[in-house]
Length: 232
Image 1: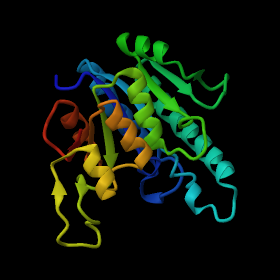
Image 2: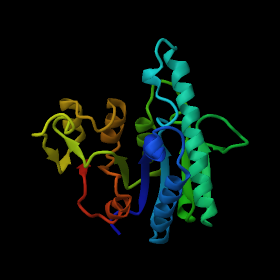
Image 3: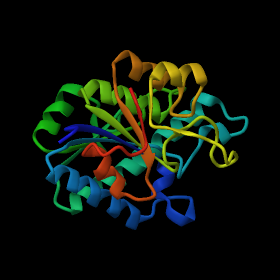
């Protein structure tokens, strides 16, 4: 096993399917099946899910940024509840922890408890971002990975990896196989926001950026296959 303890970062949009909005329950079930297979292989899995299938704060017009970000936090909670339900229906133990206090939904974030749950074979779903406005779910993923001592962050995206320029608009874009976080920050590459990248760099956290079009890539990356871009 290449990586035992994983932090899987999933975009909210990837749960929406063709509708581009809301939750496609069949996709949730597919993700849950993949995570179940990781657990069966002996991996310890934490999950952070974005909220873009419901809300994107940067497109909220004149709304106060803090208010827009709080709506985004609630969107991540909805996605996290769906993922928790999908795994529970498969018979797996799941603990939902949320940075936004919701005692009837999940437990407060507690790194020590999360690590104990992971060791016991439970999946831990981290909802609510960091619990603060002005921080992305990438920052939340970096923070939770540091808190649980994750071996790596698996960042599932809609592209094959990290490129030197936008591959959708530049046919000569080149994909990196490996980068450092200093290079990401200096070249302003679109791996994750600067706060998340700096946190990963300071805590020596590895990140693999890969294409989620094929969900099997999650299994392959977790086992150490050289897919996507490794940032260390």
